[in-house]
Length: 237
Ligand SMILES: C[S@@+](CC[C@H](N)C(=O)[O-])C[C@H]1O[C@@H](n2cnc3c(N)ncnc32)[C@H](O)[C@@H]1O
Image: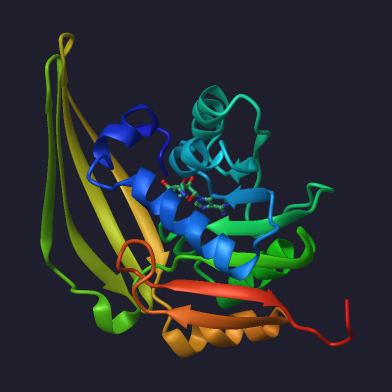
């Protein structure tokens, strides 16, 4: 998905303020789980959140994209970053917080995969641990056919990324065109991203099926909402 553009990810998403988001995450953890000291960042990308959280927490990460894992490890040397699929992983480690941010969960296009992922997150939680999931859009929030453009204008590097948004069933589709200008010339590449649009009710039911109690904050870190979950307390831990 990101293999052709991984090296440009941080520039492309420089409109996001990861430092402020990390502060919000710290505040939330302080409120919900004040003794937390470790975080697993699932679908960590280039470790932009981890970079800011690593001063306060032991933070490790997994991602499907090998180049992101390499970039993440380079940024956060005391964290352990590895390639893994969020719907099927077993690290043999437990954390106080498992987070999955910036809509990465939407890349799981089948409901069963989301439940499997949440079960994996739960297996990697210490007692009393917290799960944070920032969702992709819900079906009613998705505008089919609207064109989008993003530009980067740096000395020696120009990027123009354009796409229009499509829909097939509950799958949102983005076919990105990139024009990338470097001193070596201008290259055109394309990239396809497909993410499932789950309703609030579906998401809540996925958490329940995974044995988690969940609260939903409609604003969250980046106006996309945030699910805050804990293991269901069947017996006292
Ligand atoms: C929008 S990026 C978010 C990255 C990072 N969390 C951030 O906030 O910048 C989505 C990420 O999900 C990862 N991803 C997609 N499907 C995945 C899967 N099945 N398992 C693990 N990572 C996955 C991608 O490689 C990418 O890093």
